[in-house]
Image (cartoon, helix red, strand yellow):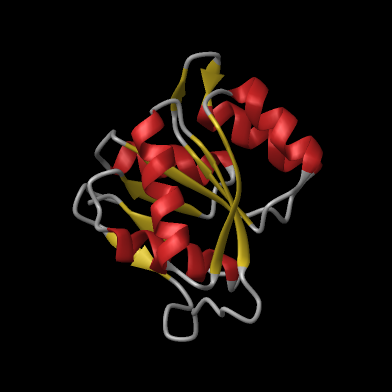
Length: 148
């Protein structure tokens, strides 16, 4: 997959419903990214941001309280690697869709996301509607891989 490749499955039927909002959790060490996801969730009736975490310890605590319908995961965190955490997490929660959300470009990061079991990859330079689209696709059982 090259850097300009984008692939999605089930996009024609993927929607978020206000009657059945999807629970989203975000793990990212950058406060503004967490705030952007909070804003996206507030503007999207079919999304409910249930918790955010700035590191993996906080993510483990959040997962101990409530398992989301989709987990958005950064790659580089102060206390570990998002790819490794995703692999570890999916051993105990194999059906949890993980969306890797990274500032890193290129197909090699998309490939690493797929290898660790993530169902999606998005770069941090995408518009909010693409984030909503990716989450809807993951919630419907599809995959969303965008290498910019």
